[in-house]
Length: 142
Image (cartoon, rainbow, N blue to C red):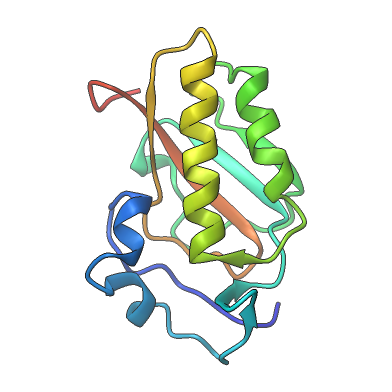
């Protein structure tokens, strides 16, 4: 899939990504490819999987999913959240696009009848183009 990225920032929030340079240096880019002046992590975002806890994340990544998927243990996701994720699918993945997607998802939850959520991006292999996000409620659980 072009540029490779193995997330090494252990159980941190997406806003952290640009802070402390931790994730950028740990990604181990195979090549320095840029999109709009930003380092490319993966050529294309094929799928997003929403899960309720970090334990549900497969650190070796997810293969063969296209679209938006929910863990069976996650409560239904409002249409606003699906609509917020959709524009990021089939697009190049950069740290900026992951940050923008996280913010869009949180805003979508705020606009829906569901409680405000936090979105975590645990360590995982994203080279398949599938990103797994943990949806947490304000209390830190799902």
